[in-house]
Image (tube, rainbow, N blue to C red; front, side, top):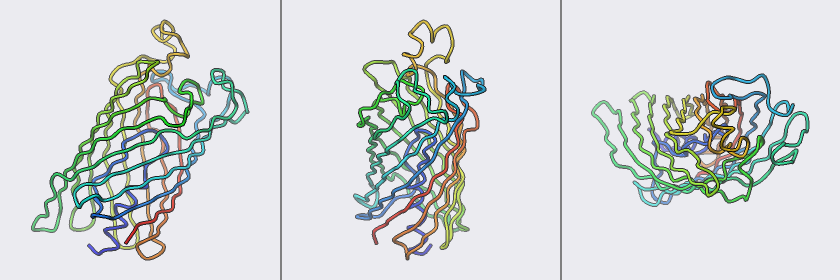
Length: 299
């Protein structure tokens, strides 16, 4: 694998963080010592119905029509050593609705704020190359996600849960000699909020990708399974406060992601693009998103 191909592979992995939902930021590629990547992106997300329990509604509450979000994201990864890297991620989100109706809980027609700061350390545990030039990598990571924007987490148009999350993740990646790879990942997310019992969750993903010196692409399935919680509109939901208990619902989803990266100036600058859509969910938005990003990678 040549130098350009190596860099473009994991550059896209860093920038393919979908705006569709919270998910682990990590991947099975590792930067070398002192390598730095900075990625900025814009994403547009929209949904005009959601899952109440496991049933899709005919529209959004309060006659809002489609709820749309613009997400501006800044991401970075730095290679501390050849086996250890650190990542940081910070999004700014602005949400409006099609009919310009005030959120009945938040009382605003537009919600905008910096959202959550994510900080992670990722370590390589196994990196083995076989006689047929295929390669197996195993790694682990841990990190924290901190709400830093001062936003309100309770509302139909809320941009996040306003909760702290502590996450641990493990992954395995297999690369073939023909530049096709498979990656599987699992993470546990421990979530804390002083005002609500936010359910912890398991996060899973499976990714299939291909690369050459001209482009990199992958398709991914991402799953969240909340470990506790109740359904929107249920008697239990009403008993614990109705809308004020939104953070305590069981939020599950299965999402599909497709991303592509193309270098545009040597191996230092490139453009990434992505598409994401919800496949099924529980107490979750039935959303679709598109993204476009610019990536800088130090030589």
